[in-house]
Length: 528
Ligand code: HEM
Image 1 (cartoon, helix red, strand yellow):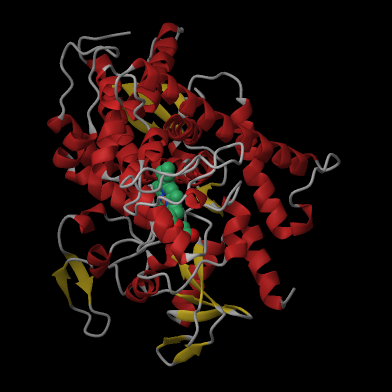
Image 2 (cartoon, rainbow, N blue to C red; image 1 turned 90 degrees about the vertical axis):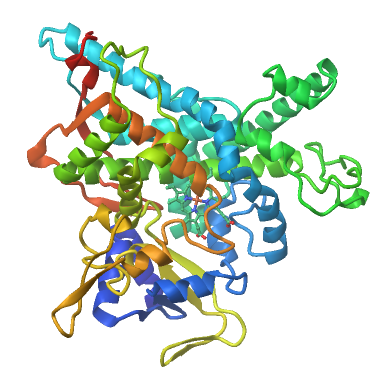
């Protein structure tokens, strides 16, 4: 272990690595040495070049540790051929057209139950002696439960129903145990992969990992058995779909996905869960994912897609409530575009859909983008291995084999790309803003260069986020509908400041975003 490693652990332990790296870039410029064999580069345009191809590979040991719960998968692989093939199969699953297909599932599993729960809470409050429907909830926790239920339903084919659960669910404990385990075994690798009954948190993580792997395998098996039965009952899949028997979720889209390359050799056909070959694929069908590969991809989506999205939801609400004029502008936009019918009741009010939200709520889009810039859910530094020939940046040459890290939080606040980067300004996404010229003191009114280049929050290039469209759809649906149906305020305005900390994702240190909700229908005809 070198001095650089101590620095790395120090930064990890503070949970403020994102902020420390940002401060160092402001002090030392766009490049500095991060460790004995690694550099950090904060330069949006250059980062895009690095990420535009597979030349700068993922360091296998770092990625497999966190994201390889089971088999190598799209997230953990460092092999360009494996990745190209897997992304070729999975990227079409996450197109907007497919998001529309699964939107109903997202609404029924997550958005509607959450709205109903908030109405229930308000109704219960109104029934007590205060008579007021306003009620306090911890939005951070509610959003964690929401995205857990949605991703679980989409990738495991079943809702864990945590939104409505009174007690913690076993599966939720498995995942949280696993996340904690990953954090500990990263610092103490010798604890990895073995039962540790005398160290309860490690043992919990060990059990958690076994639990989620078994669950993923069982889920895929059950779905494949179900589809076999369907094939017996209906002449073809289209007839089954018309009868409403084909599930609308990501698991199904992954099962149906084929790559463009026809592969007729038996030895390349995917093995089944018992390890034997599933037999040759039919000509022209292309390769599909084996059951084990499906289980592995479902798992990594669960790991990569829940806390990232719930963190983004919490930070949007926090940013809005900390900037009441932005909040008010958004409320006006939502209620003008989608007024509540005067006789609306909590049960009858419709849910606004993603296409209408995108078309009619531009300020919401800007607020989401600005929050993803300002509080990137994955605020960490993204490491890549420098290929043969080394890396030239300005006057510097960094040798092959070193790591280059791209700090997402710092790049999203790079003054070269964003005017007044430390301010939360959603308007920058809609219209030119004043960019002061540091030399002349004057300036110009132009679009921020960062708007054109784009935020780094989902990364970019071939290794960019697979679930970006899904995350954006979840954000739009949740925020538009929550803001339309309820008014939101900090529960304790005098103590509302949150301290962001980084534990893989950026979250409030307290794990709390305490807010008061008041149903808007209360002011019309409908009452509790
Ligand atoms: C606001 C929410 C999200 C954010 C900020 C986010 C961010 C990111 C980032 C920064 C990466 C690159 C990581 C790296 O290379 O180290 C990534 C990759 C990935 N994300 Fe997301 N993500 C989000 C939601 C999701 C969702 C909902 C899913 C799926 C259900 C998902 C699945 C993945 C996968 C599979 C990869 C690996 C892609 C590849 O290597 O080709 N993410 N995400």
